[in-house]
Length: 230
View 1 (tube, rainbow, N blue to C red):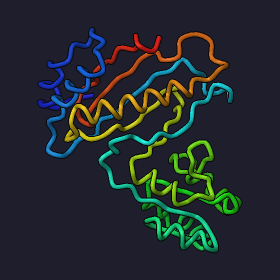
View 2 (view 1 turned 90 degrees about the horizontal axis):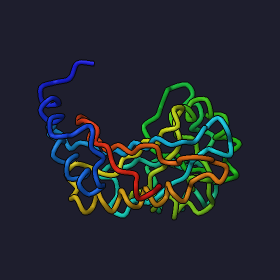
View 3 (view 1 turned 90 degrees about the vertical axis):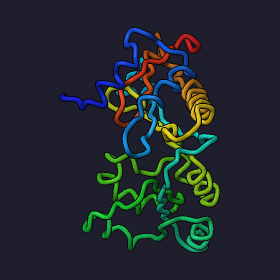
């Protein structure tokens, strides 16, 4: 893959053989974020889990103390007084069964997170083939299937992010923007790692965290030491 001149210049700042302390890694990643837009800072965690086994799956959510820097659009599936509650809590879109054809037939996906009350999951389940592959399907473990829609919406708007294994058993999570202070990014990073460690499957044998890499949207990866968690 051909890289641009800026990437080549920023890549020289990173020693690929070094496993940096998280604080130093965050400072370095901020230096490599030289694009004209406010780049997202992401964490990529390679685990020793085998997601093909249900008992080794990792899925959950954590509220980052300083948010993600992104304005999140929330869609809530509910009925009755929960519709009013969702609107009052600041949901961007609220509805029920009438939204199904809009998503199925019109390809409407102008939202980032989907929340549903338990009594609506029968309806939402029809969207599994569309929402599932995009990571948008509501899930109790992520707190997006709940009767407490107010708390769910408030948490999401405050910076709640979901983490889960991909097919390569890697977790990819944004922890903020390049414009964030090093302290804010460090606090978000620590909150994420604390949650990931708590989510360690009891059935896992061997090393849990195999590698951690930090990177800005357009920047090179910076390897982070996992010594603290071994």
